[in-house]
Figure 1 (cartoon, rainbow, N blue to C red):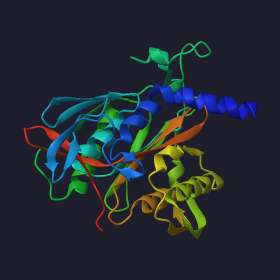
Figure 2 (figure 1 turned 180 degrees about the vertical axis):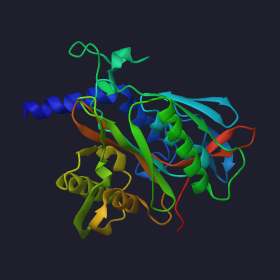
Figure 3 (figure 1 turned 90 degrees about the vertical axis):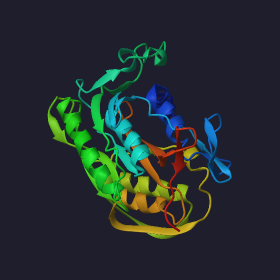
Length: 316
């Protein structure tokens, strides 16, 4: 029991550095309120942007800096995670992020050593929790509207991955295309504890099976992650509060030797439902992944010359 309590305490401390902030940011789009999708409390909105409604005002993800029109520099402990957020917003395409299992001392750092990270230390942990060292990535987004946003996203993401390598940031990542024009930026190689570059296997790359049954979405996600663990994948921890708005409907769902990523995507893709992606963050201290659900919103022009964010939905 003491070991379990310590693990929970460590998880909460880790969340105070980046993950908790990330959760509050990403769960705002589209946010859940009283079990329904809506505008997050305290989020800036513009009236008249949509008939009979409001849109949250668009702002760049934290860590993204616009250099000039269509050109951005992203600097963060997980720059490709921010790239996924930025491109999802600009292109209206679901783009997920799946971390490396960080193990090398050259790839990680203490929060106190990161710029702005001094506030997450404690008496018991004076240098704060461990996280990836990160770096910078250059992003160039075409200014002309594309008739095929998925193809545009593919080219822009691939260029960002090349920039990631060019900046010699920790880890090597690949682009995975799946579902209905969706993408995930997935760790492919990273150094192990001995400093040797080794292949990575995302927990969502393992094949899983579980019997078809009627479940809520929250129950389905729990079964998917338990199946990942049973298949030898690194454990994934999800936060139940993310799924409070998915109590209904109950759907019949199962999997038979399918890639976990594909199963997860199908669970979230509901006719007429909001589009989602996710961020899978590895915590080197508890040696587990943390799952964050991300609502997809696209930047749209609004009266006055600024931009708003419109939640995207699947066709009915």
